[in-house]
Amino acid sequence: MHEWALAESVIKAVVENAGNKKIKEAGVLFGELQAIDKEIFVFALEELRGQYPRAAACRFKIMDEPAVFRCKACSREFPLKGLKKTRDEAEFIHFIPEMAHTFLKCPECKSPDFELVAGRGVSISYIK
Ligand SMILES: [Zn+2]
Image (cartoon, rainbow, N blue to C red; front, side):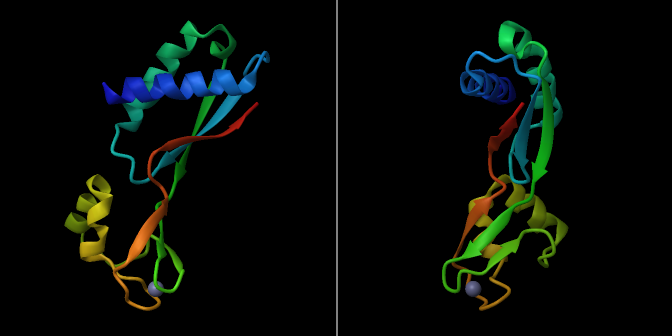
């Protein structure tokens, strides 16, 4: 059900941001570490948009946003992709990004103290 609630809040935000204009297309950034089902989310968008006249004809373009971390020690930013990790670790990080510290280190200074700066959650990137 989380997918439906999220889809509805995305549509509402798009409608609010568009003002009085009819919306043709909206770009939605879908974080790599988003723990929701993308297919259900997309389906929910299609189903729910009809309830909002201005968004009824809107095409939602879903774009994957890769996860990026920033080291708190040296400020180096590094993507989750390309870091050495096992399949199990990758899966674990996907569901509990906070646990990434257990498996990953900054590639520059080896510090385990970093934060997630992109790739979590869903956001709107543009409205046409
Ligand atoms: Zn570092």
